[in-house]
Image 1 (tube, rainbow, N blue to C red):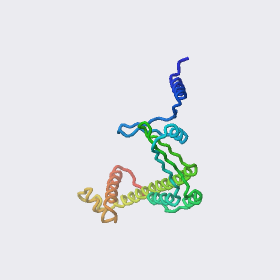
Image 2 (cartoon, one colour):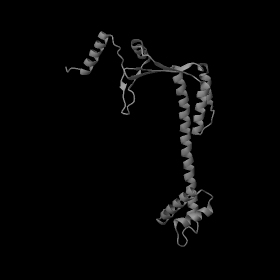
Image 3 (cartoon, rainbow, N blue to C red):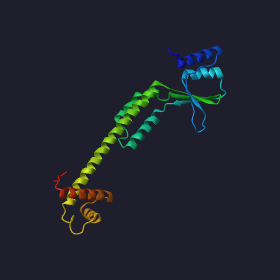
Image 4 (tube, helix red, strand yellow):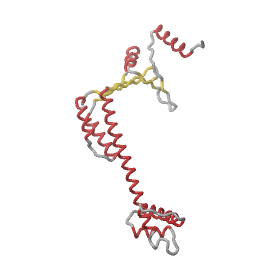
Length: 222
């Protein structure tokens, strides 16, 4: 059987750490090319073990208090940005569900330096994670409804352009005399009250329909 170098290395380092009473942490030091400080992410238990063994002189600790009203207001602002109802029933239900956790610590972040490496540990409560998931479910549903509405809006705009193009191409002046795109768009301006972009789209589509009709394709009403 071939020698398992990976298993041998791990076993040897564990034995050495045990013999020297060094702290062994299962983690990877992250480095970047921009010259920033190397960093390692620790579990809560490992962070406590490393602090106990090496006693860093400074420990940076942030305990984030759960502000339910602020979190709900942020979610409402995001719904505003998406373009849906500001205070839907689902968001009110989330507010009621997590009201008892208001003012409690929802997340804790600890950081400290040892041997030039930034050590960081992050812990969140289960209910804090559930709150985030509940809000994200609502926001994702709103994003999906907005996407569907946008597609529907674009579909209606396309149908309106097609209808106007049919009217334009059947107008007696559309192909009268020396024609050009500008002249045909000027005709569109007299027939429809729309912005220049829409009128340009209508005229372009009308020219395509005219070409199809000249090729023997029967145009259909939209």
